[in-house]
Image 1 (cartoon, rainbow, N blue to C red):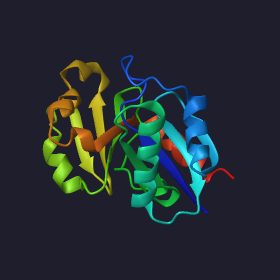
Image 2: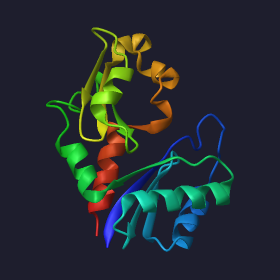
Image 3: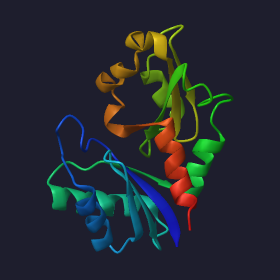
Amino acid sequence: MKRYVALLRGINVGGNNLIKMTALKACFEKQGLLNVVTYIQSGNVVFGSPDAAPDSLCGRIERALAASFRYDANVVLRSQKEMQQVVGRAPKGFGTQPEKYRYDVIFLKHPLKAPVAIKSVPTAPGVDEAHAGTGVLYFSRLIEKASKSRLGKIVSSPIYKSVTIRNWNTTTKLAQLLDAP
């Protein structure tokens, strides 16, 4: 059985697409997914599945979410191995100065690739840094100049519907949950 994390896009944000985590967990379990655990209210679901085809699994989850909660479900799916790589291959120093920088991981939905996506993510010189990874972009911004960050402009970019963003703490915690027995 493979372990995955489903990163749901656009739930419980700004009063939209409100979903209780108990209902979300039940929806996953009804799909035959195992050892389902939700993490914080922003739509992170860790689970096991014997299904080895991530694309079909992702589509199945999106259809179940749309039917159960009546919203246009959009999920980014990552395997345990992929999440280990996201954390392990972060740029040198990424996440190490939380008192100075805010760190985010921009997860890309297949088939979007990092070299294409990074062209749509503007950075403010002296404030933001973006680095391409495998299936992700690593984004940091200087806290003292956070109001000048251009990360918010991603909502008007052509890739916006194909990404979901998690802060570094959430990303590392999800990787730990995937590694838990």
